[in-house]
Length: 341
Picture (cartoon, one colour):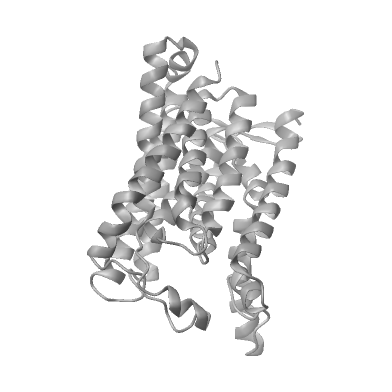
Protein backbone atom coordinates (compact mmCIF):
# COMPACT_ATOMS: atom_id res chain seq x y z
CA UNK A 1 0.00 0.00 0.00
CA UNK A 2 1.14 3.53 -0.72
CA UNK A 3 2.50 5.21 2.41
CA UNK A 4 0.15 8.18 2.13
CA UNK A 5 -2.80 6.85 4.25
CA UNK A 6 -0.74 6.18 7.42
CA UNK A 7 1.06 9.51 7.01
CA UNK A 8 -2.31 11.22 6.70
CA UNK A 9 -3.61 9.33 9.77
CA UNK A 10 -0.62 10.47 11.83
CA UNK A 11 -0.87 14.08 10.62
CA UNK A 12 -4.62 14.21 11.23
CA UNK A 13 -4.23 12.68 14.70
CA UNK A 14 -1.61 15.28 15.58
CA UNK A 15 -3.52 18.27 14.20
CA UNK A 16 -6.89 17.31 15.68
CA UNK A 17 -5.52 16.51 19.13
CA UNK A 18 -3.36 19.63 19.32
CA UNK A 19 -6.24 21.81 18.07
CA UNK A 20 -8.76 20.33 20.53
CA UNK A 21 -6.53 21.44 23.39
CA UNK A 22 -7.17 25.07 22.49
CA UNK A 23 -10.81 24.60 23.48
CA UNK A 24 -10.75 21.70 25.95
CA UNK A 25 -8.10 23.01 28.35
CA UNK A 26 -9.91 26.30 29.18
CA UNK A 27 -13.29 24.54 29.12
CA UNK A 28 -12.24 21.95 31.72
CA UNK A 29 -10.72 24.76 33.79
CA UNK A 30 -14.03 26.60 33.64
CA UNK A 31 -15.86 23.47 34.81
CA UNK A 32 -13.28 23.15 37.61
CA UNK A 33 -12.45 19.61 36.48
CA UNK A 34 -9.09 19.83 38.23
CA UNK A 35 -6.89 16.99 39.43
CA UNK A 36 -6.84 16.31 43.16
CA UNK A 37 -3.36 15.33 44.33
CA UNK A 38 -3.40 12.72 47.09
CA UNK A 39 -1.19 13.14 50.14
CA UNK A 40 0.43 9.74 49.52
CA UNK A 41 2.30 11.12 46.50
CA UNK A 42 5.43 13.28 46.35
CA UNK A 43 4.79 16.49 48.28
CA UNK A 44 5.88 18.75 45.39
CA UNK A 45 3.07 17.32 43.24
CA UNK A 46 0.68 19.43 45.35
CA UNK A 47 1.63 22.36 43.11
CA UNK A 48 -0.12 20.53 40.26
CA UNK A 49 -3.44 20.40 42.07
CA UNK A 50 -6.21 21.96 40.01
CA UNK A 51 -4.60 21.15 36.65
CA UNK A 52 -7.47 20.06 34.36
CA UNK A 53 -7.88 16.31 33.99
CA UNK A 54 -9.83 14.10 31.54
CA UNK A 55 -7.59 15.53 28.82
CA UNK A 56 -7.44 12.07 27.28
CA UNK A 57 -10.63 13.10 25.48
CA UNK A 58 -8.36 15.10 23.18
CA UNK A 59 -6.42 12.15 21.79
CA UNK A 60 -9.42 9.81 21.95
CA UNK A 61 -11.35 12.09 19.61
CA UNK A 62 -8.21 12.84 17.59
CA UNK A 63 -7.33 9.18 17.07
CA UNK A 64 -10.81 8.01 16.11
CA UNK A 65 -11.42 10.92 13.72
CA UNK A 66 -7.95 10.50 12.20
CA UNK A 67 -8.64 6.84 11.43
CA UNK A 68 -11.95 7.79 9.83
CA UNK A 69 -10.34 10.55 7.75
CA UNK A 70 -7.55 8.23 6.58
CA UNK A 71 -9.99 5.47 5.59
CA UNK A 72 -12.27 7.91 3.76
CA UNK A 73 -9.37 9.50 1.90
CA UNK A 74 -7.96 6.08 0.99
CA UNK A 75 -11.37 5.09 -0.38
CA UNK A 76 -11.76 8.27 -2.43
CA UNK A 77 -8.20 7.97 -3.72
CA UNK A 78 -8.72 4.36 -4.75
CA UNK A 79 -6.34 2.53 -2.42
CA UNK A 80 -7.92 -0.82 -3.19
CA UNK A 81 -5.36 -2.88 -1.28
CA UNK A 82 -6.55 -1.48 2.05
CA UNK A 83 -10.22 -2.16 1.34
CA UNK A 84 -9.44 -5.58 -0.04
CA UNK A 85 -7.92 -6.37 3.36
CA UNK A 86 -10.93 -4.91 5.18
CA UNK A 87 -13.10 -7.28 3.16
CA UNK A 88 -11.70 -10.10 5.29
CA UNK A 89 -13.80 -10.21 8.45
CA UNK A 90 -10.94 -10.98 10.85
CA UNK A 91 -8.91 -7.99 9.62
CA UNK A 92 -11.92 -5.66 9.83
CA UNK A 93 -12.87 -6.89 13.31
CA UNK A 94 -9.33 -6.36 14.59
CA UNK A 95 -9.58 -2.67 13.72
CA UNK A 96 -13.18 -2.03 14.74
CA UNK A 97 -13.23 -4.23 17.86
CA UNK A 98 -9.87 -2.80 18.89
CA UNK A 99 -11.16 0.76 18.71
CA UNK A 100 -14.37 -0.22 20.49
CA UNK A 101 -12.48 -1.99 23.27
CA UNK A 102 -10.26 1.06 23.78
CA UNK A 103 -13.33 3.33 23.88
CA UNK A 104 -15.02 1.06 26.44
CA UNK A 105 -11.87 1.09 28.58
CA UNK A 106 -11.84 4.88 28.24
CA UNK A 107 -15.45 5.03 29.42
CA UNK A 108 -14.52 3.04 32.54
CA UNK A 109 -11.74 5.56 33.10
CA UNK A 110 -14.16 8.43 32.50
CA UNK A 111 -16.52 7.09 35.17
CA UNK A 112 -13.56 6.86 37.54
CA UNK A 113 -12.47 10.44 36.76
CA UNK A 114 -16.04 11.75 37.02
CA UNK A 115 -16.49 10.24 40.48
CA UNK A 116 -13.17 11.70 41.62
CA UNK A 117 -13.65 15.17 40.16
CA UNK A 118 -17.41 15.79 40.26
CA UNK A 119 -18.52 13.55 43.10
CA UNK A 120 -15.39 14.43 45.12
CA UNK A 121 -14.56 10.82 45.95
CA UNK A 122 -10.77 10.72 45.58
CA UNK A 123 -10.51 6.98 44.95
CA UNK A 124 -13.14 6.89 42.19
CA UNK A 125 -14.51 3.46 41.29
CA UNK A 126 -13.66 0.66 43.70
CA UNK A 127 -11.00 -1.85 42.64
CA UNK A 128 -13.66 -4.55 42.40
CA UNK A 129 -15.89 -2.42 40.16
CA UNK A 130 -13.01 -1.52 37.85
CA UNK A 131 -11.78 -5.10 37.63
CA UNK A 132 -15.21 -6.46 36.79
CA UNK A 133 -15.83 -3.87 34.07
CA UNK A 134 -12.37 -4.24 32.56
CA UNK A 135 -12.61 -8.03 32.43
CA UNK A 136 -16.07 -7.73 30.88
CA UNK A 137 -14.75 -5.46 28.13
CA UNK A 138 -11.70 -7.70 27.56
CA UNK A 139 -13.93 -10.78 27.32
CA UNK A 140 -16.18 -9.05 24.78
CA UNK A 141 -13.14 -8.14 22.67
CA UNK A 142 -11.80 -11.70 22.73
CA UNK A 143 -15.21 -13.11 21.82
CA UNK A 144 -15.30 -10.77 18.83
CA UNK A 145 -11.88 -12.05 17.71
CA UNK A 146 -12.91 -15.69 18.22
CA UNK A 147 -16.17 -15.45 16.30
CA UNK A 148 -14.53 -13.53 13.47
CA UNK A 149 -12.24 -16.49 12.86
CA UNK A 150 -9.07 -15.89 14.89
CA UNK A 151 -7.67 -19.40 15.25
CA UNK A 152 -3.92 -18.91 15.71
CA UNK A 153 -1.29 -16.75 17.33
CA UNK A 154 2.36 -16.41 16.35
CA UNK A 155 5.21 -17.02 18.79
CA UNK A 156 8.82 -16.06 17.97
CA UNK A 157 11.00 -19.05 16.96
CA UNK A 158 7.93 -21.34 17.10
CA UNK A 159 5.59 -19.89 14.50
CA UNK A 160 1.85 -20.28 14.21
CA UNK A 161 0.12 -21.92 17.18
CA UNK A 162 -3.43 -23.31 17.04
CA UNK A 163 -5.61 -21.64 19.71
CA UNK A 164 -8.97 -23.28 19.07
CA UNK A 165 -8.26 -26.88 20.07
CA UNK A 166 -6.36 -28.86 22.69
CA UNK A 167 -3.90 -27.00 24.87
CA UNK A 168 -4.23 -24.00 22.57
CA UNK A 169 -7.55 -23.16 24.20
CA UNK A 170 -5.56 -21.94 27.21
CA UNK A 171 -4.70 -18.92 25.05
CA UNK A 172 -8.09 -17.32 25.73
CA UNK A 173 -8.07 -17.17 29.57
CA UNK A 174 -4.40 -16.15 29.46
CA UNK A 175 -5.28 -13.45 26.91
CA UNK A 176 -8.02 -12.17 29.24
CA UNK A 177 -5.50 -11.64 32.06
CA UNK A 178 -2.99 -10.25 29.56
CA UNK A 179 -5.43 -7.54 28.41
CA UNK A 180 -6.44 -6.69 31.97
CA UNK A 181 -2.82 -6.56 33.15
CA UNK A 182 -1.40 -4.41 30.36
CA UNK A 183 -4.33 -2.00 30.35
CA UNK A 184 -3.76 -1.32 34.03
CA UNK A 185 0.01 -1.21 33.56
CA UNK A 186 -0.42 1.68 31.11
CA UNK A 187 -2.67 3.35 33.66
CA UNK A 188 0.07 3.01 36.33
CA UNK A 189 2.61 4.59 33.95
CA UNK A 190 0.60 7.81 33.92
CA UNK A 191 2.11 9.41 37.01
CA UNK A 192 4.25 12.33 35.85
CA UNK A 193 3.94 14.89 33.06
CA UNK A 194 4.30 13.37 29.60
CA UNK A 195 5.43 9.90 30.70
CA UNK A 196 2.56 7.65 29.55
CA UNK A 197 2.15 9.75 26.40
CA UNK A 198 5.84 9.54 25.45
CA UNK A 199 6.17 5.82 26.13
CA UNK A 200 2.97 5.08 24.19
CA UNK A 201 4.26 7.19 21.31
CA UNK A 202 7.31 4.92 21.10
CA UNK A 203 5.18 1.76 21.33
CA UNK A 204 2.67 2.96 18.73
CA UNK A 205 5.50 3.79 16.31
CA UNK A 206 6.79 0.24 16.77
CA UNK A 207 3.39 -1.20 15.88
CA UNK A 208 3.06 1.16 12.94
CA UNK A 209 6.34 -0.17 11.53
CA UNK A 210 5.62 -3.79 12.45
CA UNK A 211 2.16 -3.68 10.87
CA UNK A 212 3.63 -2.14 7.74
CA UNK A 213 6.29 -4.85 7.47
CA UNK A 214 3.76 -7.63 8.12
CA UNK A 215 1.20 -6.04 5.75
CA UNK A 216 -1.53 -5.46 8.34
CA UNK A 217 -2.73 -2.28 6.67
CA UNK A 218 -5.65 -1.45 8.96
CA UNK A 219 -3.54 -1.81 12.09
CA UNK A 220 -0.84 0.25 10.39
CA UNK A 221 -3.34 3.12 10.05
CA UNK A 222 -4.58 2.69 13.62
CA UNK A 223 -1.06 2.81 15.07
CA UNK A 224 -0.16 5.83 12.93
CA UNK A 225 -3.24 7.74 14.12
CA UNK A 226 -2.41 6.93 17.75
CA UNK A 227 1.22 8.03 17.32
CA UNK A 228 0.19 11.35 15.80
CA UNK A 229 -2.36 11.95 18.54
CA UNK A 230 0.26 11.26 21.23
CA UNK A 231 2.52 13.93 19.72
CA UNK A 232 -0.40 16.37 19.62
CA UNK A 233 -1.22 15.69 23.26
CA UNK A 234 2.43 16.10 24.32
CA UNK A 235 2.19 19.76 23.30
CA UNK A 236 -0.20 20.16 26.24
CA UNK A 237 0.99 17.38 28.55
CA UNK A 238 4.77 17.76 28.57
CA UNK A 239 6.24 19.23 31.78
CA UNK A 240 4.86 21.50 33.10
CA UNK A 241 1.58 19.91 32.00
CA UNK A 242 -1.32 22.19 31.14
CA UNK A 243 -3.67 19.21 31.25
CA UNK A 244 -3.62 15.60 32.49
CA UNK A 245 -5.04 12.67 30.53
CA UNK A 246 -6.76 11.17 33.59
CA UNK A 247 -7.89 7.56 33.73
CA UNK A 248 -10.06 8.46 30.73
CA UNK A 249 -6.93 8.78 28.63
CA UNK A 250 -4.65 6.17 30.19
CA UNK A 251 -7.31 3.45 29.94
CA UNK A 252 -7.84 4.32 26.27
CA UNK A 253 -4.10 4.10 25.63
CA UNK A 254 -3.98 0.75 27.40
CA UNK A 255 -6.83 -0.59 25.29
CA UNK A 256 -5.24 0.68 22.10
CA UNK A 257 -1.82 -0.79 22.85
CA UNK A 258 -3.40 -4.19 23.52
CA UNK A 259 -5.52 -3.92 20.35
CA UNK A 260 -2.39 -3.24 18.29
CA UNK A 261 -0.63 -6.22 19.88
CA UNK A 262 -3.47 -8.60 18.99
CA UNK A 263 -3.98 -6.86 15.67
CA UNK A 264 -0.67 -8.11 14.26
CA UNK A 265 -1.24 -11.67 15.60
CA UNK A 266 1.72 -11.38 17.98
CA UNK A 267 0.45 -10.27 21.41
CA UNK A 268 3.44 -11.92 23.09
CA UNK A 269 5.72 -9.24 21.60
CA UNK A 270 4.09 -6.70 23.91
CA UNK A 271 6.21 -8.16 26.71
CA UNK A 272 9.18 -6.57 24.91
CA UNK A 273 7.56 -3.57 23.22
CA UNK A 274 5.70 -2.77 26.45
CA UNK A 275 8.59 -3.55 28.79
CA UNK A 276 8.29 -0.14 30.43
CA UNK A 277 4.62 -0.72 31.27
CA UNK A 278 5.60 -4.11 32.68
CA UNK A 279 8.31 -2.55 34.84
CA UNK A 280 5.85 -0.03 36.25
CA UNK A 281 3.29 -2.70 37.14
CA UNK A 282 5.85 -5.13 38.56
CA UNK A 283 7.33 -2.41 40.77
CA UNK A 284 3.94 -2.05 42.45
CA UNK A 285 3.54 -5.82 42.89
CA UNK A 286 7.06 -6.15 44.28
CA UNK A 287 6.63 -3.17 46.61
CA UNK A 288 3.35 -4.47 48.05
CA UNK A 289 4.64 -8.05 48.43
CA UNK A 290 7.90 -6.94 50.05
CA UNK A 291 6.11 -4.60 52.45
CA UNK A 292 3.64 -7.28 53.53
CA UNK A 293 6.51 -9.63 54.39
CA UNK A 294 9.00 -7.20 55.93
CA UNK A 295 7.00 -4.04 56.78
CA UNK A 296 9.71 -2.19 54.86
CA UNK A 297 9.68 -0.58 51.43
CA UNK A 298 12.04 -1.76 48.71
CA UNK A 299 11.46 1.37 46.62
CA UNK A 300 11.08 4.87 47.98
CA UNK A 301 7.70 4.86 46.28
CA UNK A 302 5.93 2.89 43.58
CA UNK A 303 5.23 2.84 40.65
CA UNK A 304 8.93 3.00 39.96
CA UNK A 305 8.90 6.40 38.23
CA UNK A 306 8.11 7.90 41.65
CA UNK A 307 11.14 6.11 43.14
CA UNK A 308 13.43 7.91 40.70
CA UNK A 309 11.52 11.15 41.22
CA UNK A 310 12.06 10.92 45.00
CA UNK A 311 15.71 10.09 44.32
CA UNK A 312 16.15 13.54 42.80
CA UNK A 313 15.52 12.91 39.09
CA UNK A 314 13.70 15.68 37.27
CA UNK A 315 10.47 14.71 35.51
CA UNK A 316 11.97 15.46 32.10
CA UNK A 317 14.89 13.10 32.80
CA UNK A 318 12.56 10.30 33.87
CA UNK A 319 10.48 10.71 30.71
CA UNK A 320 13.61 10.68 28.52
CA UNK A 321 15.21 7.65 30.19
CA UNK A 322 11.98 5.65 30.41
CA UNK A 323 11.19 6.40 26.76
CA UNK A 324 14.69 5.18 25.87
CA UNK A 325 14.02 1.94 27.75
CA UNK A 326 10.75 1.59 25.82
CA UNK A 327 12.66 2.20 22.58
CA UNK A 328 15.15 -0.57 23.42
CA UNK A 329 12.28 -2.95 24.16
CA UNK A 330 10.63 -2.05 20.87
CA UNK A 331 13.91 -2.57 18.98
CA UNK A 332 14.20 -6.06 20.46
CA UNK A 333 10.57 -6.79 19.59
CA UNK A 334 11.25 -5.68 16.01
CA UNK A 335 13.91 -8.37 15.48
CA UNK A 336 11.50 -11.35 15.18
CA UNK A 337 9.20 -9.20 13.03
CA UNK A 338 11.89 -8.04 10.62
CA UNK A 339 13.75 -11.34 10.37
CA UNK A 340 10.58 -13.45 10.49
CA UNK A 341 11.81 -15.54 13.42
